[in-house]
Length: 398
Image 1 (cartoon, rainbow, N blue to C red):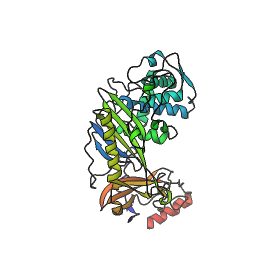
Image 2 (cartoon, rainbow, N blue to C red; image 1 turned 135 degrees about the horizontal axis):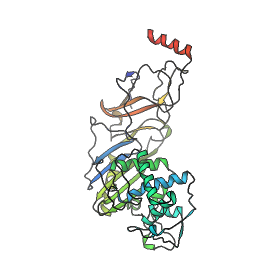
Image 3 (tube, rainbow, N blue to C red; image 1 turned 120 degrees about the vertical axis):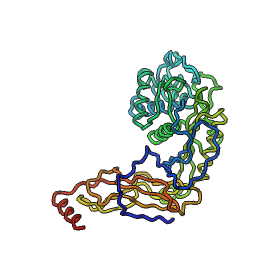
Image 4 (cartoon, one colour; image 1 turned 30 degrees about the horizontal axis):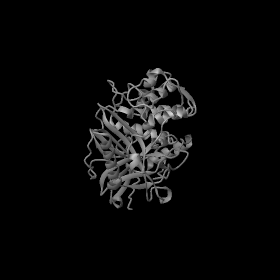
């Protein structure tokens, strides 16, 4: 592959910010056209490369229905990680939880239900009763839990989301967007890898509850062995919704050019039926894997460049990313990928590990495709007075 690196192009302004974990595909590069998707709004995200591959009305406000439960799960998983709950801990079932309308796990106030079973009931059966029981277990009451949901949405950068309840039933002001849902789903998988396996469970029911209520409503779990999540949703106002994710192995995406996983995430909102949301999601996922190929440019923590540093205790600065730098390009275009680095010159210490220093500009056939921020892989402290003075003289005569 022909990668041209220009290591010393000066930025005229500040390095462009990395937009909320998603590198944006620029309009100049010719991209494959997605298939027709019968939904009010949709998107396809390559999680491995952080690129949107397809989208429609991703910033339009929509009702999330039971996709709301992804945020509920995020807060429950966070409580588990903080040892505020444990999976074996039994929680009471309040009258409020018992009387929740809509999809249910069918628990009642006579029961004390382990947290793990409530999680499975919330995810597999989309139980509103289990969801409220978990919300009360985490926060003491639903109202405080909803406040926590909105605080967490703000912390994740979900700028267009407002929660009114933990389960997703229709309520004024309870809205989100496809973009925000992709942020939530991606962070849920990244932040809680030990718990996301719950979303791949096909069948579950709690002892003493109806046997007919045991199947996950995500039909893709039964159709595509590479699909391992995530969540369905439906109300009359929201239509039929599905956030699906699949992970497939591809050559050269692992360490040292070994095979590695490539994960895609689809968000389909407002489809006409349970079957339609599954079909449209499958269509998007299959298209994404065939219309685009993933190209790994650099391994995790591999220096993309090692430019000189002035007035520092070290003479050079390693820049790259803590994750592998992977880009999604139209199928067959891998050999046409070129990269160049834009950065300020000179680089003057100090630099803190993780600080953005430069931008990797990726192009195809010399047409801009996307920008990837490059970070300091290690800190470089400022030199002493004599070292800074000497470098100041050298810079002056440079």
